[in-house]
Length: 134
Image 1 (cartoon, rainbow, N blue to C red):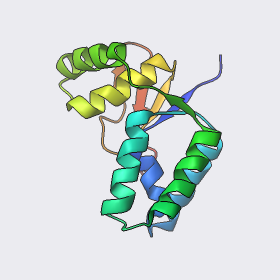
Image 2: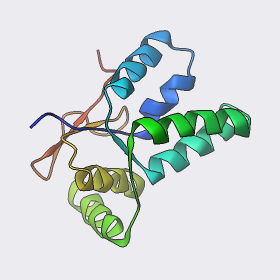
Image 3: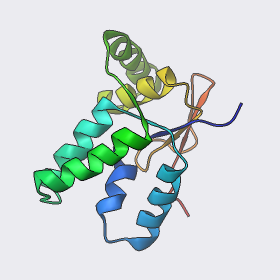
Image 4: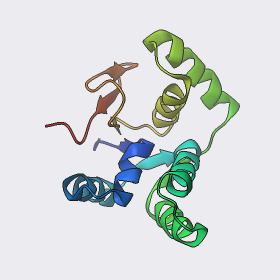
């Protein structure tokens, strides 16, 4: 079975950065396909507006592109329960654990994240990878 990718918010946000190397790496990964969660869309929108000061129209263009090219995993009570469990088990921030829970629900084998524990194997099936590590 081929690897299935899941993306943390920071990978999507590199599409808005001035770092051409990281932007290109993010674009390459996203073009290969995978999944995100509704939480990732929410965080992207929040940061695009607040940190990058993007107009709603521009934010909508990005989010529509994500919606059309990536699987979007909904947030459910089951996601919350799994995320809560993962937060305690792996000593993670709750929002990071919710992203992990959504990735597990999507059947992902790799979670690309710059700010989670690179190399951590979650529940024996999901490996966290920092796509921008040297």
